[in-house]
Structures are given as C-alpha cells and as structure tokens.
Length: 456
Image (tube, rainbow, N blue to C red; front, side, top):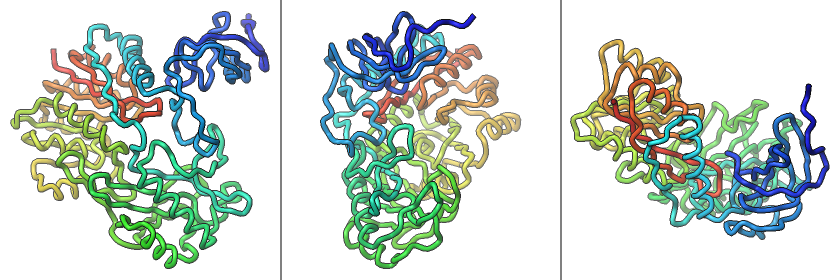
C-alpha cells in the first residue's frame, strides 16, 4: 500500500530547517517528510512552496523567512553574480566551516562507524574569496551579442558574468578581456542546440607564485576568424600572458576540452610553485585550483607520512606528480601511478624540473599496477592515495591490506567515500589515527580531508 504524502505540489507550508544536505540545501521535515530547499539554513523558520514531491522527499522554494540564522549573509548582488558554483555564499564563513566539519564528523560516524578517531578542527582560509587559479567559462550569444559566464543551475542557459567571487582577480580579468576582444572582432559564439558557431569556452589559468597567465580558446572549428588580430590584442591587453593556446572540440558533448591542442603564441606551459616545488602546467594538466590551501593540504599529507628519508613510498592516483614530488623531498624513493598518460608525461617533466631523481612514474590504473608490483615483490613503507570522488577501487584497498605498509595517508575530496574506505581498511588491520578536514573550496559545499592510518 503506497504512503499518502503529507504535502502536494504547490502547497505553501511552514517549516524549520534542521540541517544541510551534502550539496548545501536546507533540510526540513513536514510531518516526518523531508523537504529540501535551496537557500535555507539550519535553525531558520520559513514559509516554503512545495515545487516537487517524490516518495522519499520533496523539494521546496523559499518564500519568506520568519526567523534568520545568525550565520546568514545577505547577498545583494544582481543576477550576474548569483551563479558560478557558490552554493554557500549566503552562509558566513564561520558557518561554512562549521557545516563542513560537521559533515565530516557525521559521515565518518554513520558510514565508517569510526567513533574514536581524532578529527581535528577544519583548516580554513584567512581570505576565503578570490582564490581559484583556473576558470573555464561557456560562451554563447544573446540579443546578437557574445556572452560568457556561468550556467544557471540545472540548465544550459548562460548568464553573462563580469566576475566570480571565487576566482583570482587575474583570472577574472583575463576572461573579461578575452570576451571583449572576441566581441569586438565579431567571433561567432558556439550554439549548442544547432552545433554551429566557433567559440565554445574561454579558459584562463594563472600561476599565483610566478604571475604567469595562460589563455585557452576552445572552439568547434579548426580555424578562428581574425586569429592573428585576436592573439595580438590578447598580448597587448594582458601583459602577464605567457601562453595562448587553441583547443579544438568538434564533438556534440558537454566535455569542455577536445583532443587537438596547438600553441598560438608563447609557451605551451606556465609555471607555478607549491611550497618549494616547481610545476609546469599545460592546458590539460590537473593542478589544484586553490594554491594557498593546496600547500596546507600537502604539508599535512607530508606530516602524516612522517618520513625519515629511508622509506619507499607509493603514490596512487599521482596526477602530474604534485604529492609525489612533495613526498620525494623527504623519502628515499617514491613511485607514482596514474592512468592518464599525459599526466605521467607532465609528472616526469616536473621531476626533472626540480632535479628530483628519487621518483619514478608509471602509467596505468592504480588497482592494476600496484597489485602487479606487489606480486613482483615490491612493497612500500608508506602508501598515499588521492583518489577521485568515487574513492579507491576495491582491488587497490585489498592490495594495501595484503601489502601492509606501516602507514597509509588518504587524501580525499569526498567524505562519504573516505568513510567507506577507512572502514574497509580498519577491518583489514589498520587503525585510523587522525583526520584533518581542509577547506579547499570556500563558498562551495566541497571539503577535502587527509587521514592517517597505521598498521595495528
């Protein structure tokens, strides 16, 4: 017998918010039925319009606040500033840190059944705005004019945006200048529905420590109209630019970058530092977008590895070698594994760039390569993992349990899969000693963690 819901679509109801979801929506219960509402904060009482109902939960729209949270911030900027991934901009920074730390504590308890682990207070930023060193914004057309900005939530409608409060000023400036030049030169914007036009996305990357700027023009077509003039104007108006790159993506796809990349002007990379380690960053490189907090995160990982200079270390999911090279400063030998061939090529270049000879990189899936190494008799004293949001593969976790490195350092971008994997490692003979949440992405719902495990 199906349950009768206590609300219907288009009902107006009075609720009190008690929590936030993992994506920052306010959680209320109406006669035991969960309602999720954007812009609601715990402790607030409000009138809500029900806009969607399902068997297990409903979705509402905030109509009127009766009682405000002390953590609420009024966002007075116009529509142009609403979008760009700032799900928590209405929550002050103290409130954001509290929410993220609570999220980590809750999932480690609920999913990981980890009750006696030391969870440190989250490490936040002194200045939690204007921190991202990379932006890639979609380009479209409105009223015959080229626009670039962000998609409205759950749509492909582009809002023309002057700046983002989470991007470095140099990145904001680069996007706006390139947009203006493309307007002046009448470069046709890409039309997603018709799959016509030229310019799909504008990307900017900035080295915060070096002051070097890269501009990437992503197009549907092999050629860019007025290309020489476009390049000349970018160079003239953006003095920090060191690299202008053209990437071609001719497919009907939501994937931003295509497979063909060519340099239009300058270098094929820009450089930046994390601590004392120098990195070359190409168009396709994965490189952490918050340089200030990346240093905090990696220093914590290095601290948890507790290296004396005698250890062999394996770094799974090593990317372009960022954590590997940090570890190589204090390890005897580091072995990095990454499935993306181009990332490994970058990692090897970055090792050479820093004169580090005690690090080796292999192409392949961590869950395939590391078990192979183990079967060949190669083991590690410390094993570091920094997996994608889905967490570690089961085969890799089993290999860690079989290999029995003295320490495991787990860098995570998803507390839920971290909790799941810690439980598996605990059941396999490890003890989770400490977890350190780090706020890598202020104004968003994302939180990173570093966990230290030792063999029992």
